[in-house]
Amino acid sequence: MTRDDGGSYAATLASDALVEQIRPILAGQTPEVVGATLAQLLAIFIAGHAPLLRETAQRLLMDCAEGLVPVMVEEMIEAGRAPPEWREGTKQ
Image (cartoon, rainbow, N blue to C red; front, side):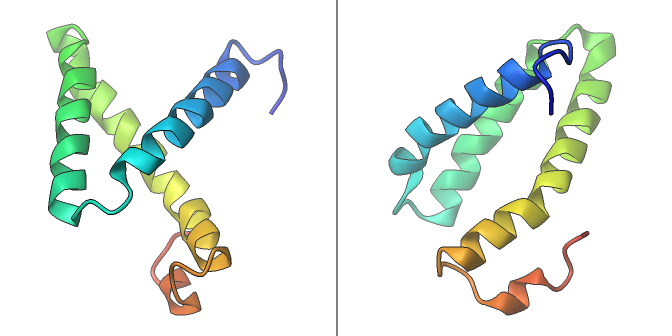
């Protein structure tokens, strides 16, 4: 990733900082609470787009999340929060 990429680098840095702020808030919550919280945030994101763009925004967001799953699985395994078997079934 370069700094001259149309703002993606800055957006990634900003999102990383927000995730680190949010992570302790969600830690220890049940999966149902975390899921409901994320669903509300996703709805806010999608609703913030013009009606004709909502389906595309939702698809792009899910594609992005799907691409990050293997990275997060590795992070969880390295931190001892998941067994190595969790690598199975993730797109590499």
